[in-house]
Amino acid sequence: MQGEAATIAALFAVDPVGLGGVALRAPAGALRDDWLALLRALLPAGTPLRRVPLNCSDTALLGGLDLGATLQRGRPVVSQGLLAQADGGVLLLAMAERMGGAAAARFCAALDTQNVQLQRDGLSAHHPARLGLVALDEGIGDDEQMPRALQDRMAFRLVLDSDAPDEDGPDWSAPEVVAARLRLPQVVLDDLGLRALCAAAQALGIDSLRAPLLAARVARAAAALAGCDAVEEEHIAVAARLVLAPRATRLPPPVPTEADAEPQDAPADTESPEPPVPDDPATPPNPPPADQDAPPAPDAPGDDDHEPPPAAGETLDERVLEAASAALPAGLLASLKISQLARTKTPSAGSAGVAQNSALRGRPIGARKGEPRAGQRLNVLETLRAAAPWQKLRQAAAHVPQGVVANASSAAPASRRIQVRKEDFHVARFRQLGQTTTVFVVDASGSAALNRLAEAKGAVELLLADCYVRRDSVAVLAFRGKAAELLLPPTRSLARAKRSLAALPGGGGTPLASAMDAALALAEQIRRKGETPILVLLTDGRGNIARDGTPGRQQAAQDSLNAAAALRGARVTALLVDTSAQPHPAAQQLALAMGARYLALPYAGAQAVSQAVRAVSGR
Image 1 (cartoon, rainbow, N blue to C red):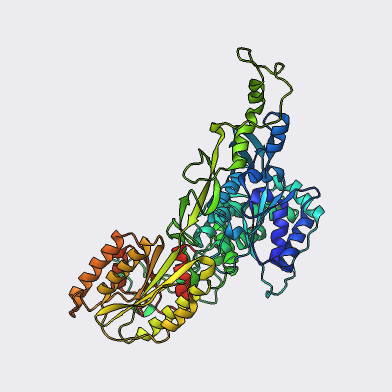
Image 2 (image 1 turned 30 degrees about the horizontal axis):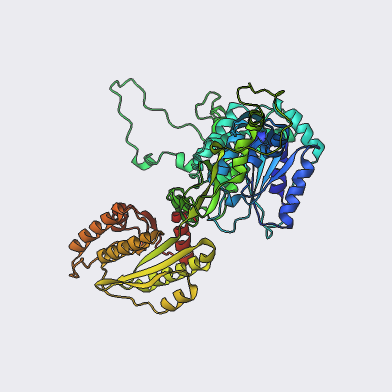
């Protein structure tokens, strides 16, 4: 087992409730099973360990009305969910990269409050839920991630790689973990160490305040595991490496050296001004310099032994930041721009388009109170849940003659027929996912057209490769000369796309305004079909052909801004990829006018364009 992975398992076993959890990114296999087996071995005996399947219902997760027991006993019976059953233990979340926002909110609330509040089916109950989570993330690419809100509440982000070499690390046992748990409440972290963790988080661009708090808990757990009653510098470095480094969004600023600290404007000896002549002739001139071989006087101000030592807080901050910087993931700067697009993606865009509530078809998302009209489906289970608590009263009232007060003793030997009334009806709710169509608007003019067309072609093929899973379509619209041409209508056929994009024309003028008008018309056509359009414009933003086909940069620029304003008014999700050698103000102004995300990729390969499109669309 890799050294970092074993350390994370031991630290999490010491304080699973305080550390929140582990976001474990690894495919199903022997490597992940070995880490889970190590965690089970380190947890104290009797620790609850439950597995939560994907799409677990609220009743199974939070608890609710036990329908069978309620119908049998004639009174409401509450059942505990998985969160309450795992109190004091660990929950394993299967396929966390596919978890929805509603399910993530349930786990976030449990981690924040450490209890489950049940308010449903006419029931009100509170159960303790002091637990930790292990989220099993089986995502392949960066576009498949577990919800950020849940990931933010977990101290560790662990990626298991089968190609990584095994590292020798300390080996802990379950008795050592139990001893560390007993020692943990007495471990102290001073203000100096806490300030160092906060400074490192700020230097690494971590916005969440939970990160330094979780790092402080990890430092205390590391000290307890090492048998110390106070957090030392090495424990703070472990917390910075394991908690702060995986959350970094930027490289830290360089640490100033002694040479940088020296004043740069100090005059040279040859340029030093002559000493002023004293007005009093009796005043002796400046004494000659002392002999260099003579020892300095004890009270000499230049004695190095009497210089104040550097501030301990600053030195600790630098060492903690250095430990976190050494563990920064590779390729951090290359993925920052695309990750920023993912943070600002359209909230309504899902993995297969905009979600629309439906009463007749789609994925079931629960039930609501109401009558089954206009083809709506009756949810039998929820209807029985609503009727179950009232069966004893209804059956007693059904066997009492008119004018007699109903009570339990006056009821005849009752039939066990369930009485359902109109107010108990619940109908099923569904959510239907619309299709997403990505429209590539490619600048095919000028000498750089060949590269841009090749990038668009590669990105189209990458997106179409998994379109059958994501229910996506792709279209390509190229513009050059005096007009725009639809090279590839919306399609999910990879073979058709390859045939259409085999020979793409290039060269000529740049009718940018006409291209955006054609893109808007195509987007409106896609919307009328009930699909969600996403425009990806690959250009440098410098048009030279006006809408009427006449050349002229000034009029072409004004027409482009007007067309961009029309796209913004239509509220079309768009991404502008600036393909200039350097980020150009014209492209930035155009992106601002059309309300599009701006991404400067002068060497935009097909993989980079494909990742940017997925970040914007939320896929």
